[in-house]
Length: 514
Picture 1 (cartoon, helix red, strand yellow):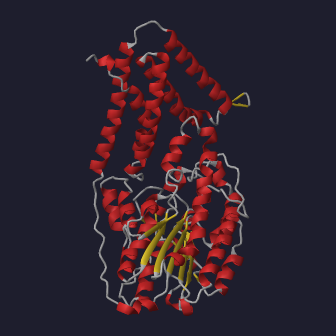
Picture 2 (cartoon, rainbow, N blue to C red; picture 1 turned 60 degrees about the vertical axis):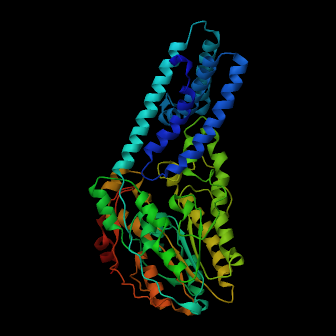
Picture 3 (cartoon, rainbow, N blue to C red; picture 1 turned 45 degrees about the vertical axis):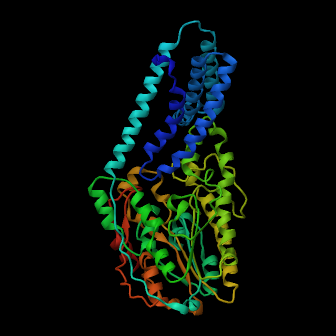
C-alpha cells in the first residue's frame, strides 16, 4: 500500500487543538475532559469527509478541504486575540467582520485551487500526514512526560470514627455553602465601596454567628477548599510538590473530591450531597452519595468553553454558553432547599457556588447581563468591573437569603455554614508582578473572606473570632459528635495563582487587626 494512499491528516489536524489546549492546562484539567470534544470532532469530520468525497469524487482533495477548514476554524481565536487590541490610525483592527472576510477569502481561494488543480497531490498528502503525525506526537510525548514527572501521590490521614447507633436522630442536617470569591465586609467596603451591613444584620437576627474579621488559610480555590474539607493544612503536600518543581493540581483535586469531612460524616449515618458548580472536582465528588446540578456537563465545562472560544465560533460563544452559566448557579440555589424532599436520613450538603466570582452574568435583580466574555479569570476588563461585581454580589445576597429562610423554616433546624474560599483581587489589577510582589493591602484583600454559621439552639459560642476555615469542622465535629480533634493553630498563607510556593502572611494580617 502506498504511503500517499493513507490519509490521516484531517483527523489529526482536527484533534490537535483539543490536545494542545489540554497540554497547556494539564496542571488543573482532568484528562477525561478531552474525551467528548475529540469524539464530537471526529464524528463531524468523518461524515463531512464522506459527503465531500461523494460530491468531488476525489478522496485526497476532500481530505485537504477538510484539513484547510479545520485549520482556519481553530486558528481564528488565537489570531483574533492577537490583534484584538491593535488600532491603525484610530481604527480598531480586531473586529470579527474584518477577520471573517480574510478567513473566508483564504478558504475560498484554497478550496478553489484544490478543486481546479490538475496536479497530483499525493506528495502533499504524504507531507501533510507527516506534519500532523509529528505535531500530535510531540504533544502526546509532552503529555506523557508531564504525567510521569507529576506522578506524585499523597496519603491523607484517616480519622477515627465512632459508632453512634440510634443517636443519629439527634443530629441536624448540615448545609455547607462556599461562595466563590466573596470578600469580607471590610474589603468589600474599602476596595469595592459597598456596605454589606444590611445583609449581615439580617443573618445576625436569624441567629447566625458572624465572624467580624474572617480570613482564609489559602488564597486560591484549589488549595482552600480541599484544606477545609480535609480539616488540615496542605503545606506538606504543597512543599513536596514545590520542591519537585511541579505545578500539578491533581493532588488537591483528588483529596478534595474524596475528602475526610464527607467520609467522616457518612460514617455517622449521614447521606452526602454535592453540586456541580462547573469548577474542578465539584464536577465529580467521589465522597458524595448524591450529585446534583450536573445534567449539563458539556456546556458547563470550562475546557469545552475554551475550545469553542478559541475557534471561529468566538463571536457567538458567549451566547452558546451563557445559559449554562446562569442555570448552573440558579440550579444550586433552587435544589439546596429541596434536598430534604429526596432523603429521609440526615444530610450533609456541600455546595460550591461559582459566584460572585466573575464572570458577572447577573444584574442586581438577577437579570442576565450582556457580556463579551465569560472567562472566569481576571484577564478581561469586564472582570475588573467593580460595579458589575457589586451588582452580582447583591443578587447572590438575595438568593442566599431566600435559601436560608427556606432552610430555617423547618421543625428541625439545620446547621448552615456560609463561607468563601478567598476574597477579591481588584487591587492586583491583573498584574502578574503584583501577584509576585503584592503589597500588604493586596494580601489582606485576597485573604479577607466571610464566615457565617447557624447552629440550632444558638450554640454559636463554640466558635471564636480568630477561627480560620481549617478548624471549622474540627470544632463542629468535636461539639456534635464528641470527637477530640486537635484545634490547629490558625495560619494564613499567600501564593501567586497556581503556585505552591506558600508564604506565611499571618503576621501581616493578624497584627493590624489586634
